[in-house]
Length: 324
Length: 180
Image (cartoon, chains in turn brown, purple):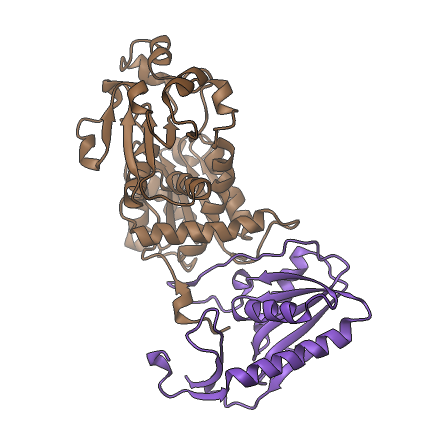
């Protein structure tokens, strides 16, 4: 039980709030740890005792199926107990603030808090005020770090490398926390990142993030190794950001036909889910040979296990209301 | 040699190590030849390397399969909150139910690593029998664990560490005694 000092590593932080602040080495550590955790998911008994007696609270103020279930499975696979709070069923409806809810939960001796909230920076506020490790599961349009990490793991598994891989992210970049986290992660790992979408859905100073911008899909996918397709949210159309779903499909939908004509033969398709079939992605492409959508979901559990493992996870003692 | 090993003394040379491993393998063979098949599972990282060498030495004399165990997630001493040991992959690509299994590690000390390995094995299946082979037994057990095969037994002061250094991952091949 005396591992070499070279075998001991960790993240340099208490919380996982975004990809922006992570160093390349930290991203690589999370990914290599996740690879080890994938083996556990193949076992007859898919659980290890590492987080026995520890507790995680899931604070989801926005709807989620995939992410919540993925985090929840990841915790259970590590023997971590969990409690769950959603906005519709909690005292949030009675007017309790995010911080009060979290403080009260921490008073119940928690080690981890996983939060999804519509306000950018919500997880930062919690992180500053709680002794537990806070994991951001999506804060408004800002970041969704574990999504980017599972995407990066999927890319690493498929290609065996990151350097010089060419990716184009297609869709509503402006409102996408998935796009932001991925752009930061992919560029840190040396990938060549482009984005493509209607001008109204491309943030104004996006080129400062080191990406190339395309408005024409056919040009954008040329020579790319990965097409990362974002979900088109119907609300955006109501807000007048693009004229009609039909027009969006015509210009930006990824179909077999478009791929055959303009994309590399070996291109792969990724999507964070849930897919609007027939809108941003043709069903035959989503279910086709090029799709990595289901491996992405499997990797989500492994990556979240790795995050729980690598974060310190607080003492479970809390800090009390006095220091609010 | 690494800088940190200035005060280390060499206890065993590469030649001696080779002889001891051959003797250890011979004992393992004698005990298992009647059954004719054995799963050899090394504990990461140095136990894995030794297990691989034992499998090579056993050759085709009996039917052997090789696997490795990473016991990190089963440790009982993960109290440090800011540093985490690297989790490596457990690789046992076969069913262990109703098979004889040999666990291999480099140094047996407190017995806590073996306790963790046994707990992990239970999660992977139910072997017919588990035996333990260690290259060095340095005594000072803290748990009721006893090896079946020992390369060499040593009496070493508690303040000293015994390190088995192996070509595959270290700069040299020898057994060292290192003051803590």
